[in-house]
Image 1 (cartoon, rainbow, N blue to C red):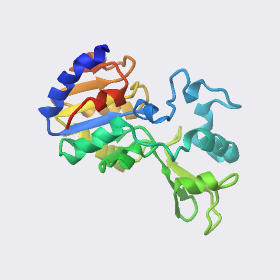
Image 2: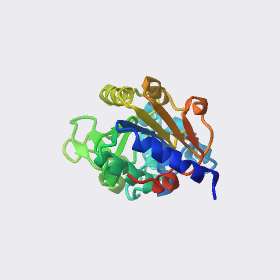
Image 3: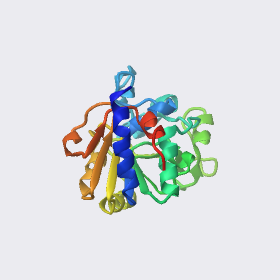
Image 4: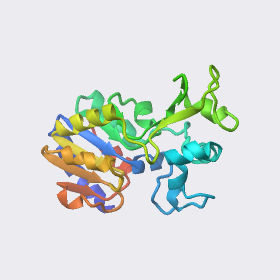
Amino acid sequence: MSDWKAQISELQEIIDSHRSIVFFGGAGVSTESGIPDFRSQDGLYNQKYKYPPETIISHSFFVRNTEEFYRFYKDKMLITDAEPNAAHKKLAEMEKAGKLTAVVTQNIDGLHQKAGSRVVYELHGSVHRNYCTKCGKFFDGDFIRNCEGVPRCDECGGLVKPDVVLYEEGLDQNVINGAVNAIRNADCLIIGGTSLVVYPAAGLIDYFSGDKLVLVNKSATSRDRMADLVISGPIGEVFSCLRV
């Protein structure tokens, strides 16, 4: 029996006794859906390209070398056919049952919504939303995938850009405000699948002043000491053991 399985009853008790839970998640939430994270051994930051991934997914690189950006983006980031795993599904169930008030995610894959979650604050945007930089027309992820080379608007010919926050770009203020509000009003904050090293996103958890802080992550984080419960296990497997 894995060590973390012995902690499920404690997590279940916390969920049962709270009615304003917020979930804050990162790349580790989607790895069990086949989407690579950034910092693990096989993650994007440890793969070799002509340019470092951090450089490629920056605003200045997008402007300066758009074709190379899209080559990397389509190959490694534009994942539209992944399916939600047990963590996404359980969170959607918790929201439907009136236990969970919001999901705050650093992911851009849209899997929380695909699982049925309605209140989702996507701090870093979504691959499923793309807009013409000239006229503002909306395009879905499949449009980008099916384009040869750099995507251009079929109305005005303008450059189409993913609604994804690149390095050197600021987070959307409305999304931040919604996330901060949700975290501030939560009586329980569950943090999962994130190393908590990406700022300013990780700093949002400082707004939590509720009753219980839970951390579910495969590896240790800088906030483990602050948590009431730390579970070191794969988040999909952990959540599959919970009942709503």
